Length: 224
Image (tube, rainbow, N blue to C red; front, side, top):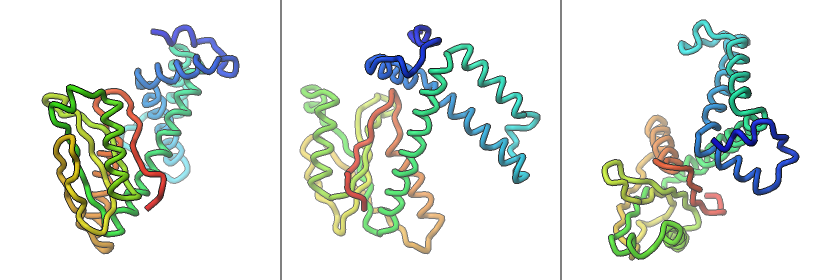
């Protein structure tokens, strides 16, 4: 694993390309998620100690156990990898939180639409993923000032498609010329708390979901 060469490195002494390579290695090996679990355990242990909360998964687990897990991670990958993985995990957490809040505002506005965007065989064969991403972004931008979308792949044939959440006072037109779109109105009311919460979780998960490596979320710069 390429991580070996960064095991004893000082992050401050790494070049720009080396830092980027380290981040990519961490993401590909999902080490930021592993560190995220350590952070979650730390938070829950604090809640147990300070507020008397109960977490079944942490029965007979202590801060000493957590410290031992962290030491094991550092022994395997180095302190620099731990630091970068922790930063990536934190950035991912805040990015998801911001996304969730934007989707929540969209749903509560009463003008949210959930769109599934697919590509026809010709588009898939004649363009690459980067180009198709541009097509999706341009089309959504033509519909509304607010949109959030991310790539996804079918479970059976791994066919590429996108899920998007947008806001519009009227039903968006099916003007997508590179395949098929399915457009569903998000029907919720401010008083229907459970349903709103369900939609927010569902739409956020769709927006951040990816079945292969990490992908950047497509979203408008303007808030709802």
